[in-house]
Image (cartoon, rainbow, N blue to C red; front, side, top):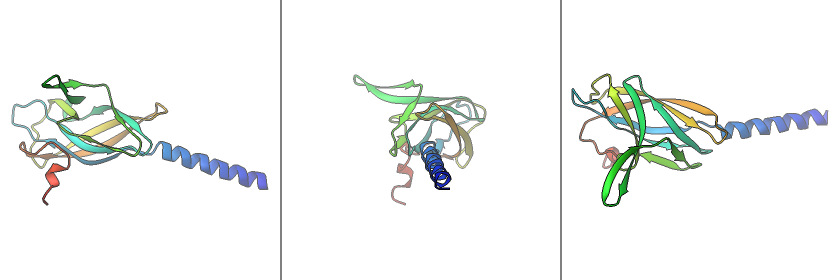
Length: 157
């Protein structure tokens, strides 16, 4: 009897450890910038937190032909934007996707994104165990002149 109780406890601890390890990434303040009628790209911004650490490895949207992960970085004295394969999310730390650093670029938009719209995004994360999880997000479209830092929109409110 003691053995089965010990085995059950060990199983429970292993299950809890696995659940904590594969805990989903938290996505907060997801938004996209509205577009003008002929514009084919926009930016998507948000806050990401992975309790056990992860990597953002892919993004998709039914509103765009493709979504790339981008980084803005100073190269010499020039700010350059480039596509990157992934964004690392250190365990328990919040990573901000904004226009001055990492962000998402929905490309070949199928619609004009208007302020107030909701744009669906599927974010694909890879854990340390190489298993992938997807998180569905509805990103609110904000006006063209909205600052691109995820928290600046709420300052002063």
